[in-house]
Image 1 (cartoon, rainbow, N blue to C red):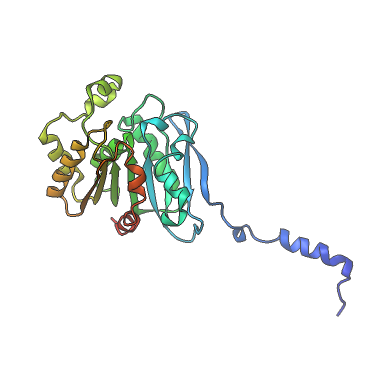
Image 2 (cartoon, rainbow, N blue to C red):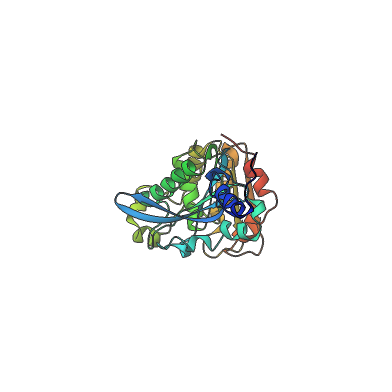
Length: 267
């Protein structure tokens, strides 16, 4: 048997490296840029993949709806607050795929076109990153909290659990004037509205968070929703932070029991 000349060994090693199958490469994880084409327009959004993500299994997937301050079209602002920030601080706490669409400037999440963008981004990420339809979750803060309740009402069997933070269902007259599309689905400030919403959400597990000193979104709305949901559902939680103003999301997403509770739910 002839031996391989030593001068050819480096070339042989290089050829073996180049011939390695693509599947052996570690998939890209962390925050990923994505785009979505819808009705002839392109929208930017972000997807987070945990470090151990693999295409060999299905993954729990969270749809995150940001607040009004992060609206735009750059596809980045929505990653600077709330769940994305908590994920950056400790990625091990959220072993899930997280989808982060962006609401356009001067729009509102519960408006039908914005809901369509959010759900289309969720569908695209679910397909690309093997999201589990039985373990699909929804959370949002402020405007995104309103959006979370709106989607939970419209799609009561889509999400395994919902976590609205400093949100509500009653919109101000000023907001309704700015966004006429919202008037068709707006609820009057009446006790019956909370009962109606709770009945539509049904048995979907809900965990509501709110700051007791919130001067942007009145805490009373979350209190009333909790009472109505508790009367209609089995798995409803409410956490109110004394002395905390509008930013209750930092505390909420830092709750040690939130992720275990969320991931224990399945359709």
